[in-house]
Length: 136
Image (cartoon, rainbow, N blue to C red):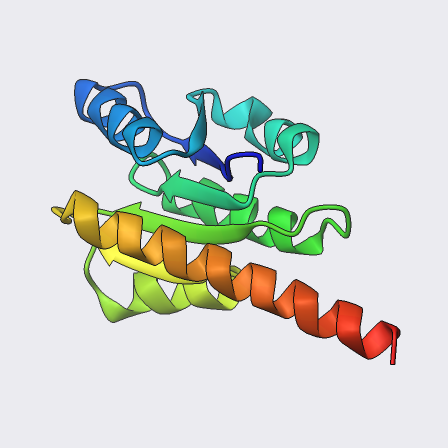
């Protein structure tokens, strides 16, 4: 079976590189994108199971990316947002835009891995239910 794909949209930093290594060690295929101008096109091209959006570069741009991923009918990715911001307004803005999970920094990598595993399982279960409903 193929590894689940994770696409990480982030600033270039050393912490991001270590997270990529953690995800690869956990058995995921990891694609890292640091150019936000090309982010949506990479999401459409790769069609990852999970998009992890580092929202600290630009809240407005991050929300636009979330909305665009949700609007694209050819992409069925779950979105996890990580951010330095902890305020309710920011969190709700991302949820309204389509984010599935919002984690505030600093976060525990094991917690993030758990969230990734959970949203992938939910996505697969949803696909099974849809398949079964179509073939009844």
